[in-house]
Length: 229
Image 1 (cartoon, helix red, strand yellow):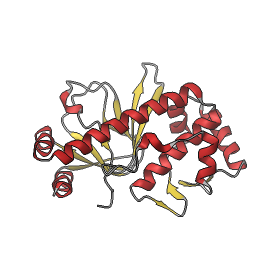
Image 2: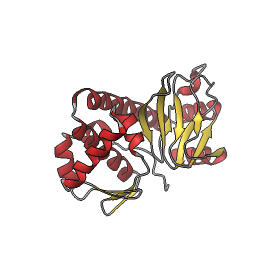
Image 3: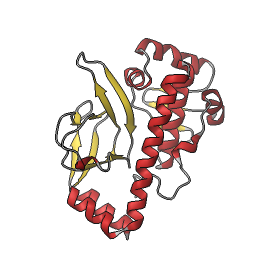
Image 4: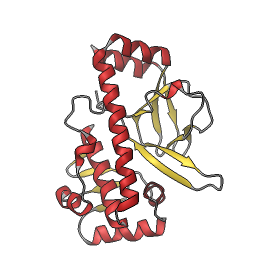
């Protein structure tokens, strides 16, 4: 029943945002909860001189700030990486769904807690890991998140991120990212073919990155909504 209600809400108001366009900008008033149905997006901060820091990536099934509508204005921007389909849930519908279902409310709390856990891990990634470990760690995380929503196949996932996207997310330059990806390829840890990422041995890549998936809490029943449900 809860999934049915949520599915109905995500079908009601759907819009498409083209690649490299903003879903919503910093300073704008948020009027809906955005849910990614298809494609990739990111949350980012931009400095006055144009430099950008990506602080999270969104894949199908992710909420973009479940409680953002309580704010008067956005303190960050959400941008489409690929062409994305976004479901917009009004604050009234969203609050009504939570009021009717404790399970939905708990699942949303879970989602917000996992989002905070990912942010902590990204801080540790940038602050403590080497460039090699940083990129490896991010690739592990994204692979497992895509796997959790049924978007992996035979050690492969679609991977639309550019080297600039990876640089903006890891605090590195695009040149450094390029060099690091070459090292990971040379060591047999990853393969990149166009927009497809292949991880032949995930356990080995996790070991190199000192990656512990506990912060993703993938075993919890409240994990990301399956994009195919």
